[in-house]
Amino acid sequence: MYANMKEVNLLLDSGEVIPDSLLIGYESMLTDQPTNPDEIGPQFYGFAEGWLNELKTLKEKTNKQNYNALMNACVHCHQSFCPGPIKKIKKLKLVGEIEI
Image (cartoon, rainbow, N blue to C red; front, side):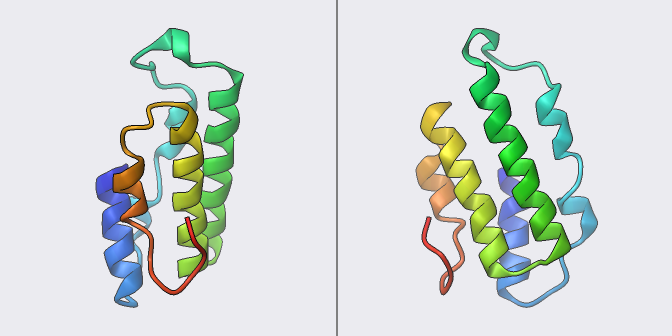
């Protein structure tokens, strides 16, 4: 996910077209086997649905604001589950739009 979003970041920042291949396949997060099943519950699935909704919005209108909203959704989930990647995710923010 991080590698794809980093590529989306670079392409969007340079004004290039985002290939669909970078924005598909994430629905499996709702059915994938979690690393720690005991830590996953309704709250995780709420965050996952929210992230997928932001991804849909980005697909419909690809711009920096929608991309940063998607990164925001990553941070919100990681604040509750696996907070380690938050600094790395925040570095994916594109300048000139909403804050994460």
